[in-house]
Structures are given as C-alpha cells and as structure tokens.
Length: 80
Image 1: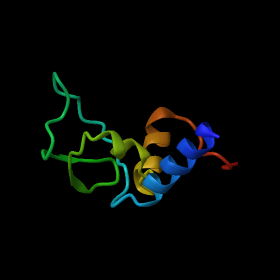
Image 2: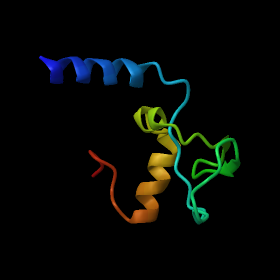
Image 3: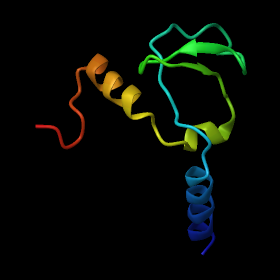
Image 4: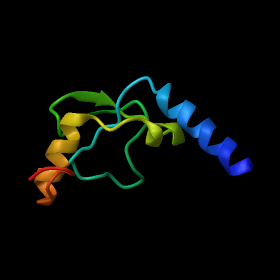
C-alpha cells in the first residue's frame, strides 16, 4: 500500500515537470554546477542549472538522449 502510494506520488510529480531533463558533455566543476548557472547541453540549448531532487524525475530531453547514446556508442532502445 505505502509503496503504491509512493509510486503514484512520484509519477504525479514527474508528469507535472516544467521542463525536460538535459545532459551535457561539459566537465563538471568541483562541487557541481551552481544553481541558476547556464550551460550548453547536448541538444544545443542553453539551459539554467537546476540541482533540485525533483529535476531527476523530469522526462529526458529527446535531443539530449539521442546525442548521449551516440557519444556512448550505445544504440537507442528499439533501434535496429
């Protein structure tokens, strides 16, 4: 019961996400990115850093996902 409620809560939070989660190939500075800083991400956008725990629940940016798979040399799921 508790686990089911926790999953429902996390799904609701994730679906209410204000923006996608991005990825960057820039070297992470010591201590991490400062909140509010601006970085260029793999899809080419410039985004403001958000280190909040909820940011990990956001949907992944499709453009960053494609570029991250290409950098890692790993095919996308379902790709043939």
